Image 1 (tube, protein in one colour):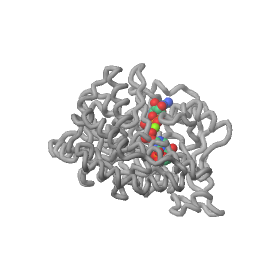
Image 2 (spheres, helix red, strand yellow; image 1 turned 180 degrees about the horizontal axis):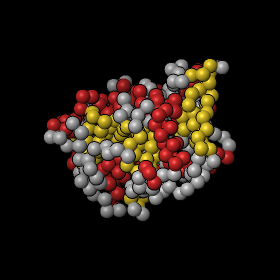
Image 3 (tube, protein in one colour; image 1 turned 90 degrees about the vertical axis):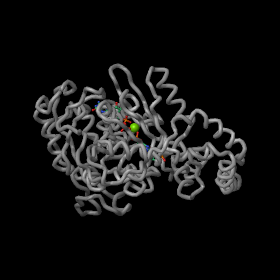
Image 4 (cartoon, helix red, strand yellow; image 1 turned 90 degrees about the horizontal axis):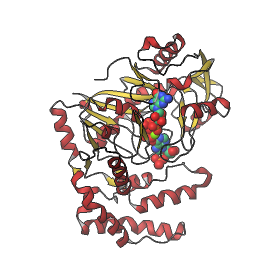
Length: 427
Ligand code: GDP
Ligand code: IMO
Ligand code: MG
C-alpha cells in the first residue's frame, strides 16, 4: 500500500514543495489534505521557479493527478488565478480533482480574518489574512459553504444567510464595519460554479480505488507540526491539522493505508507570525540565516524569524506524526559557520527539560541548551552522495538524525530538483 505522507516537521516553510516535486515523477496522485492558500510552496525546476499556494506541488509532474481533498479550504478566485498562471507557463492543469466536500473561503471569511487580527492588536496571531481560520470556524460551527453548495442556488442562499446572520451583527456592532449583503455573496459564489465543475469529484472514492489498484498516493501537508491546531504552539497556530492524522481525515483514507510518513526538516529553524520560538536569533547569525537562506514568506512577503536547529521540536515531530523518515533541507545554507549551535534540550525555570513541554507557560519560558558542532566551509551544493559531503557536514547530519529519532533519508543542498542527496529511497 504505497501511501506516503509528506509534512512539515517545524513551523512551516521547511521545503515541502521541493520534496513533493522531487517525488512527483514517481507517484500517481499528490493530495493536499488541509490548509488553503496560506501555504506557499516553492518549486524550482531548471531555471523556472513556481510558487504554489493552493494547488498540490504534484501539478508540475505531467504523469501525476493533483487532488484537493475534503480537508482543504478553497478560495475559488485564488484557485483560478493560480491555474491561469500555470496555464500561461504551459503547465497542463486539466487533471486536477477537487473534493465537493471541501469548504469555500468566502469573501466574508477573509474580511473577518483581517478585522479580527486588527482587533487583537499586539496579541494578534500574525495570520496570512487569507480567511483560513474563519472558514474552518464556520465548518466546525456547521455554517460553512462547501464546493457542492455552489450547484444548488436555493441551498447556497440559505447557507450564506445562516452564516451572515451572526457575522453581520458582529461586523456592524462590534467591529464598526458595513454589513455584508447575502445576494452579493451568492452571486459571486455562483459565478465560480461553471469553471469549477469539471474538477469536482468524489475524491475519497477516487483515492481509495487508486490505493486498491496499488497506485502511489502522496499526501502533501501545508504548514507544519508546530502550527497544528491540536499539537502546535496554540494559540499561535493555523486552524487545521497538518500532522499525519490530518491526511486521513482530510482525504478520507484510513490510517491502515499509510505506509510512510516523511517529515521535512530544515537544518535550522524558521517561523512566520507570532508565538514562542526558543532558538530564535536576534543577532547577525539570524540575519545571515535569513539572507543566505532567502527566508522571506512566499505568501505574504514577510521576513521569516530565524534560529538554530531545535532537536526537541524534531523529536516531538517524530512522535506526534509517527515519522518513518526525515528529509533534511537547506544544509547548504549552514556552510561557512565555524561551529553550529544545535538545541538539544531546554532550560525551564532552572530545570533541564528534554521533551517539548505540554504547558504553554513552560514553553514560553524555555531557553535553549546548545551543543556546538564543528562547521565546514566547502561548497556542498554539487554533492550527489552522502560521501561527497565534508566530514563535518556528515557528522552534523548524523548528529541531527541521532537526536531527532528517525532516519534522514534525503538531504537538500540547494533549491533545485536535482540538488538533493538521496540516502534511502522513499518508494
Ligand atoms: P514549503 O512551504 O515547505 O514548501 O517551503 P517554502 O517554499 O516556503 O520555503 C522553502 C524555500 O527553501 C524555498 O525557497 C525553496 O526553493 C528553498 N529550498 C528548499 N530546499 C532547499 C535546499 O535544500 N537548499 C536551499 N538552499 N534552498 C532550498
Ligand atoms: P507553508 O505550507 C509558515 C502561519 C502564519 C500565522 C499562523 C496562522 O508554506 O509551510 P493562518 O493564515 O494559517 O491562520 O495563520 O500560521 N502560517 C504559516 N507559516 N508557512 C506556512 O505555510 C504557513 N501557513 C500559515 O504566519 O503565524
Ligand atoms: Mg512555505
